[in-house]
Length: 73
Image 1 (spheres, rainbow, N blue to C red):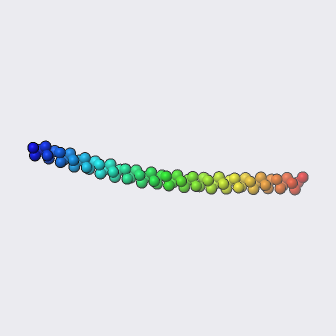
Image 2 (tube, rainbow, N blue to C red; image 1 turned 180 degrees about the vertical axis):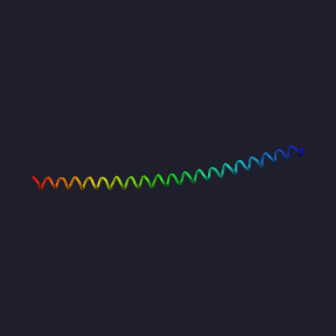
Image 3 (cartoon, rainbow, N blue to C red; image 1 turned 135 degrees about the vertical axis):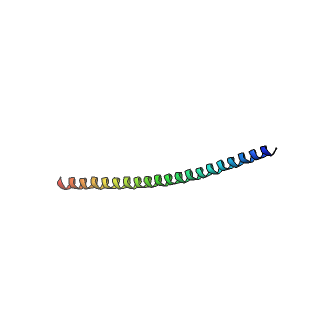
C-alpha cells in the first residue's frame, strides 16, 4: 500500500541521513588521528634531537674532564 511505501521511503531517508552523519564523523576522526600522529612524530623527532645533543654534551664534558685530569697529573 501507499502508506507502507511512504514509511519505507521515510526509513530509507533517515537511514541515509544516519549513514551520511557517520561518514562525516569518520572523516573528522580520521583528520584528528592524522593530526595526533603528526604531533607525535614531531615530539619523537624533538626527543631524538635532544637525546643526541645531550649525548654529545656528555661526551664533550667527559673529554674535557679527561684533558683536565691529564693536565693536572
